[in-house]
Length: 241
Image 1 (tube, rainbow, N blue to C red):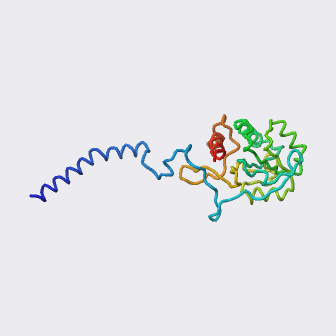
Image 2 (cartoon, one colour):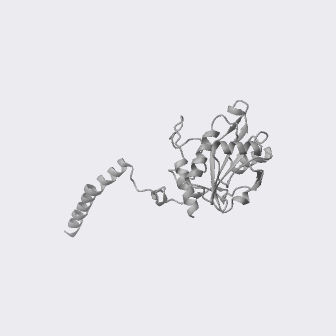
Protein backbone atom coordinates (compact mmCIF):
# COMPACT_ATOMS: atom_id res chain seq x y z
CA UNK A 1 0.00 0.00 0.00
CA UNK A 2 2.77 2.44 0.90
CA UNK A 3 4.43 1.94 -2.47
CA UNK A 4 1.10 2.44 -4.19
CA UNK A 5 0.52 5.79 -2.44
CA UNK A 6 4.09 6.83 -3.16
CA UNK A 7 3.55 6.23 -6.87
CA UNK A 8 0.34 8.23 -6.74
CA UNK A 9 2.05 11.20 -5.06
CA UNK A 10 4.95 11.13 -7.53
CA UNK A 11 2.48 11.05 -10.40
CA UNK A 12 0.60 14.00 -8.96
CA UNK A 13 3.80 16.04 -8.57
CA UNK A 14 4.81 15.29 -12.17
CA UNK A 15 1.32 16.24 -13.37
CA UNK A 16 1.37 19.53 -11.46
CA UNK A 17 4.85 20.30 -12.78
CA UNK A 18 3.65 19.67 -16.33
CA UNK A 19 0.58 21.86 -15.91
CA UNK A 20 2.31 24.83 -14.25
CA UNK A 21 5.97 24.87 -15.27
CA UNK A 22 6.16 23.49 -18.81
CA UNK A 23 3.78 26.08 -20.35
CA UNK A 24 5.93 28.82 -18.83
CA UNK A 25 9.08 27.33 -20.36
CA UNK A 26 7.38 27.07 -23.76
CA UNK A 27 6.25 30.69 -23.52
CA UNK A 28 9.78 31.86 -22.64
CA UNK A 29 11.16 29.96 -25.63
CA UNK A 30 8.64 31.71 -27.89
CA UNK A 31 9.48 35.14 -26.53
CA UNK A 32 13.23 34.54 -26.52
CA UNK A 33 13.53 35.18 -22.78
CA UNK A 34 15.25 31.97 -21.74
CA UNK A 35 17.80 32.50 -18.99
CA UNK A 36 21.28 32.92 -20.47
CA UNK A 37 24.73 33.10 -18.95
CA UNK A 38 25.08 35.68 -16.20
CA UNK A 39 27.35 37.79 -18.41
CA UNK A 40 24.73 37.91 -21.13
CA UNK A 41 21.93 38.78 -18.68
CA UNK A 42 23.66 41.98 -17.64
CA UNK A 43 22.32 44.89 -19.69
CA UNK A 44 24.60 46.56 -22.21
CA UNK A 45 24.58 49.66 -20.00
CA UNK A 46 25.87 47.65 -17.01
CA UNK A 47 28.49 45.56 -18.79
CA UNK A 48 32.09 46.50 -18.26
CA UNK A 49 34.05 46.94 -21.46
CA UNK A 50 36.24 44.04 -22.46
CA UNK A 51 40.00 44.19 -22.96
CA UNK A 52 41.17 43.23 -26.43
CA UNK A 53 43.64 40.38 -26.09
CA UNK A 54 46.28 38.83 -28.33
CA UNK A 55 47.79 35.49 -27.30
CA UNK A 56 46.17 35.92 -23.92
CA UNK A 57 47.71 39.35 -23.24
CA UNK A 58 45.85 42.63 -23.11
CA UNK A 59 46.71 44.75 -26.13
CA UNK A 60 48.24 48.14 -25.52
CA UNK A 61 48.50 50.97 -28.00
CA UNK A 62 51.86 50.65 -29.83
CA UNK A 63 54.39 53.40 -29.31
CA UNK A 64 54.14 56.21 -31.85
CA UNK A 65 55.48 59.70 -32.39
CA UNK A 66 54.29 62.06 -35.12
CA UNK A 67 53.77 65.77 -35.82
CA UNK A 68 50.28 67.24 -35.41
CA UNK A 69 48.39 70.05 -37.13
CA UNK A 70 50.20 72.62 -34.98
CA UNK A 71 53.62 71.17 -35.89
CA UNK A 72 53.99 69.79 -32.37
CA UNK A 73 55.54 66.38 -31.72
CA UNK A 74 52.88 64.07 -30.25
CA UNK A 75 53.43 60.55 -28.89
CA UNK A 76 51.35 57.82 -27.28
CA UNK A 77 52.59 59.10 -23.89
CA UNK A 78 50.61 62.32 -24.42
CA UNK A 79 47.40 60.31 -24.31
CA UNK A 80 48.03 58.49 -21.02
CA UNK A 81 45.32 59.35 -18.53
CA UNK A 82 42.84 60.02 -21.34
CA UNK A 83 40.11 57.99 -23.00
CA UNK A 84 40.54 58.39 -26.73
CA UNK A 85 39.61 57.17 -30.18
CA UNK A 86 42.04 56.20 -32.93
CA UNK A 87 41.28 56.56 -36.64
CA UNK A 88 43.14 56.50 -39.96
CA UNK A 89 41.96 58.96 -42.61
CA UNK A 90 43.15 61.41 -45.29
CA UNK A 91 42.02 64.95 -46.00
CA UNK A 92 41.33 64.43 -49.72
CA UNK A 93 39.18 61.35 -49.12
CA UNK A 94 35.98 61.70 -51.19
CA UNK A 95 34.01 58.93 -49.52
CA UNK A 96 33.91 57.89 -45.86
CA UNK A 97 36.37 60.30 -44.20
CA UNK A 98 34.01 63.29 -44.08
CA UNK A 99 31.40 61.11 -42.34
CA UNK A 100 34.01 59.76 -39.92
CA UNK A 101 35.23 63.25 -39.09
CA UNK A 102 31.71 64.58 -38.54
CA UNK A 103 30.99 61.62 -36.24
CA UNK A 104 34.11 62.40 -34.23
CA UNK A 105 33.11 66.06 -34.02
CA UNK A 106 29.73 64.89 -32.71
CA UNK A 107 31.55 62.94 -29.99
CA UNK A 108 33.86 65.90 -29.29
CA UNK A 109 30.83 68.14 -28.75
CA UNK A 110 28.92 65.50 -26.80
CA UNK A 111 31.64 65.25 -24.17
CA UNK A 112 31.89 69.00 -23.84
CA UNK A 113 35.63 69.14 -24.37
CA UNK A 114 36.23 66.89 -21.35
CA UNK A 115 39.93 67.20 -20.53
CA UNK A 116 40.14 63.41 -20.21
CA UNK A 117 38.80 62.73 -23.71
CA UNK A 118 40.79 62.90 -26.94
CA UNK A 119 41.16 61.70 -30.51
CA UNK A 120 44.21 60.47 -32.43
CA UNK A 121 43.79 60.88 -36.21
CA UNK A 122 46.56 59.56 -38.45
CA UNK A 123 46.68 60.53 -42.11
CA UNK A 124 47.45 57.75 -44.59
CA UNK A 125 48.59 60.31 -47.17
CA UNK A 126 51.36 62.07 -45.21
CA UNK A 127 53.05 63.14 -48.44
CA UNK A 128 50.11 65.48 -49.04
CA UNK A 129 48.74 66.07 -45.56
CA UNK A 130 51.27 68.47 -44.10
CA UNK A 131 50.60 70.19 -40.74
CA UNK A 132 49.28 73.18 -42.66
CA UNK A 133 46.84 71.03 -44.65
CA UNK A 134 45.74 69.27 -41.47
CA UNK A 135 45.22 72.60 -39.74
CA UNK A 136 42.95 73.79 -42.55
CA UNK A 137 41.03 70.51 -42.39
CA UNK A 138 40.58 70.89 -38.62
CA UNK A 139 39.22 74.41 -39.04
CA UNK A 140 36.87 73.30 -41.81
CA UNK A 141 35.23 70.61 -39.67
CA UNK A 142 35.21 72.43 -36.34
CA UNK A 143 37.93 70.40 -34.64
CA UNK A 144 38.73 72.49 -31.58
CA UNK A 145 39.49 69.95 -28.83
CA UNK A 146 43.06 70.51 -27.59
CA UNK A 147 43.45 66.73 -27.25
CA UNK A 148 42.42 65.93 -30.82
CA UNK A 149 45.65 65.61 -32.77
CA UNK A 150 45.69 65.11 -36.54
CA UNK A 151 49.06 63.56 -37.17
CA UNK A 152 51.42 63.17 -40.12
CA UNK A 153 54.92 61.79 -40.53
CA UNK A 154 56.82 58.90 -42.05
CA UNK A 155 54.55 57.01 -44.43
CA UNK A 156 55.87 53.52 -43.62
CA UNK A 157 55.61 54.16 -39.89
CA UNK A 158 51.97 55.21 -40.25
CA UNK A 159 51.07 52.16 -42.34
CA UNK A 160 52.88 49.87 -39.89
CA UNK A 161 50.90 51.47 -37.07
CA UNK A 162 47.60 50.99 -38.92
CA UNK A 163 48.03 47.48 -40.28
CA UNK A 164 50.38 46.00 -37.71
CA UNK A 165 49.85 48.01 -34.55
CA UNK A 166 46.08 48.39 -34.60
CA UNK A 167 45.12 45.90 -37.33
CA UNK A 168 42.99 48.61 -38.91
CA UNK A 169 43.34 48.19 -42.66
CA UNK A 170 44.89 50.98 -44.75
CA UNK A 171 46.50 50.67 -48.19
CA UNK A 172 47.16 52.52 -51.41
CA UNK A 173 44.75 51.32 -54.08
CA UNK A 174 44.53 53.22 -57.39
CA UNK A 175 41.02 51.93 -58.11
CA UNK A 176 39.62 53.04 -54.73
CA UNK A 177 37.96 56.47 -54.28
CA UNK A 178 40.79 58.95 -53.76
CA UNK A 179 43.38 56.27 -54.54
CA UNK A 180 43.48 54.83 -51.02
CA UNK A 181 41.47 52.23 -49.14
CA UNK A 182 40.85 52.10 -45.39
CA UNK A 183 38.38 50.45 -43.07
CA UNK A 184 36.58 53.41 -41.49
CA UNK A 185 36.84 51.86 -38.03
CA UNK A 186 37.49 53.54 -34.69
CA UNK A 187 39.58 51.96 -31.94
CA UNK A 188 38.70 52.83 -28.34
CA UNK A 189 41.54 53.23 -25.84
CA UNK A 190 41.30 53.54 -22.05
CA UNK A 191 43.26 55.82 -19.73
CA UNK A 192 46.06 53.28 -19.31
CA UNK A 193 46.56 52.79 -23.05
CA UNK A 194 44.69 49.49 -23.43
CA UNK A 195 42.32 48.72 -26.32
CA UNK A 196 38.78 48.18 -25.08
CA UNK A 197 35.35 47.40 -26.54
CA UNK A 198 31.91 46.19 -25.57
CA UNK A 199 30.75 42.62 -26.14
CA UNK A 200 28.51 41.47 -28.97
CA UNK A 201 25.37 39.37 -28.53
CA UNK A 202 27.51 36.23 -28.27
CA UNK A 203 29.75 37.59 -25.52
CA UNK A 204 32.74 38.36 -27.75
CA UNK A 205 34.48 41.77 -28.00
CA UNK A 206 33.42 43.72 -31.09
CA UNK A 207 37.03 45.05 -31.09
CA UNK A 208 36.37 48.13 -33.29
CA UNK A 209 33.48 50.52 -33.81
CA UNK A 210 32.00 51.55 -37.17
CA UNK A 211 32.98 55.13 -37.80
CA UNK A 212 31.49 55.70 -41.24
CA UNK A 213 27.81 55.49 -40.30
CA UNK A 214 26.20 58.43 -38.52
CA UNK A 215 23.44 58.29 -35.94
CA UNK A 216 21.18 60.08 -38.42
CA UNK A 217 21.83 57.45 -41.11
CA UNK A 218 20.99 54.62 -38.73
CA UNK A 219 22.51 51.99 -41.00
CA UNK A 220 24.34 51.68 -44.31
CA UNK A 221 23.32 49.98 -47.55
CA UNK A 222 24.66 46.66 -46.27
CA UNK A 223 22.37 46.84 -43.26
CA UNK A 224 25.17 47.51 -40.76
CA UNK A 225 23.94 49.56 -37.80
CA UNK A 226 25.50 52.83 -36.64
CA UNK A 227 27.70 52.58 -33.53
CA UNK A 228 28.22 56.23 -32.60
CA UNK A 229 25.45 56.09 -30.01
CA UNK A 230 27.16 52.97 -28.67
CA UNK A 231 30.46 54.85 -28.48
CA UNK A 232 28.85 57.62 -26.44
CA UNK A 233 27.88 55.05 -23.83
CA UNK A 234 31.22 53.25 -23.84
CA UNK A 235 33.40 56.36 -23.71
CA UNK A 236 31.35 57.51 -20.72
CA UNK A 237 32.01 54.18 -18.98
CA UNK A 238 35.76 54.50 -19.44
CA UNK A 239 35.76 58.13 -18.32
CA UNK A 240 34.06 57.05 -15.11
CA UNK A 241 36.45 54.15 -14.38
